[in-house]
Image (cartoon, rainbow, N blue to C red; front, side, top):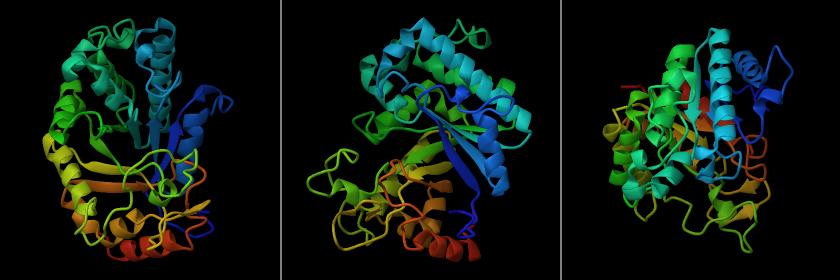
Length: 318
């Protein structure tokens, strides 16, 4: 669809997700290589979303003290960075969405040093502590050792603490400020999918998900951008990459239907880009978090039109 619509993209994002991605393709070109090749064909930089901590269940933190699990985990991290180095081209790595939020909730007093993890048995991280701080530190250390062409980032979970300030403090405590960027999560489903009644099983969650574009009622886009600004200024002034931004089309009618649920994030982001760069924004990655959502194949040409208009006069980066 990208080629069919002649879309120009800068970042091509794929999960290294549930399962053993090392078996997805036969050597010598494993899955990391496949993604890099596909990105290169589009003139884009690959973005690898490392999502392996969820292999035994989303939010299951018992894996941190499983020798079998963590040995496998570290081996795959090393292969990821060796593969990225072998491409000899830039790449982005997004470290474990949601995982940091789960650890913040589980750590006594929100202190990541109080949550045990197997780290120092990894020969590349023998000096790292055996806790969640060590997990983050080891990921950074391995990236720097094996893939200097990789740019790495952590995704704060806004729900991990009681306040944004608590989340900022936690991400600094794990060492996220030593990375290259932050990943700002928008929503993993179209807003309209969570408005349908009865609610589809693939769109759980209650609340108000459709943001007010006039920024008068709440929640709205300025609310979200204020959070992004707090993350940017509070965590090393790192640039922000928005990730998994839903692709629905604005509508005054709540809900929608399969592959045609409403959302307005594409519309707002691509028509107000200077607001994003003003809070530290570097890039926006658009994509569906579920196959039932609106995509560039079902959005009636919205992304094609708005992205073309944006690229004709892109926002200046600071």
